[in-house]
Amino acid sequence: MLSSWKEIAHFFGKGVRTVQRWEKTLDLPIHRPPGAPSNVVLARTSDLEEWMHRGPVSRAELDGPVVTGQSDSSVSLTALEREVAYLAEITGIKAVAAEASASAQDRVSALTELIAEANSRLSERTGIRAA
Image (cartoon, rainbow, N blue to C red; front, side, top):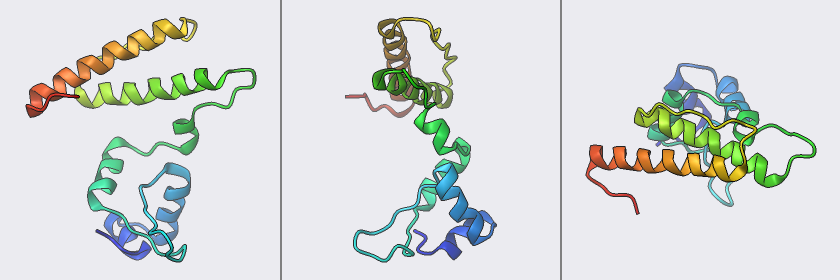
């Protein structure tokens, strides 16, 4: 557990301002204890390593595009597709994205199949079955 910006910066071999910028723009996993001053930060090294291996993703990429006229469920589905593509990547599944013009039902079906395959592969590796 790292308990200061200085320790977090040292972990990455970067400056304090750089890791503070990463928190704001690249979703660096930093925690702030409730009720503590805003400058008090905590970070688990395991979370930071996972973030580093995942590759930095900007908040804009995580939140999805801001498109006028598009329903919230459509934007949420796009964000979910990104997350499932990442899951497929880390489990070694060749993910084929559904056509953007496909119906929401077809896109959800494709995602469901990918998630089932990922769960199957993960349970083979770990011996733990998904709920």
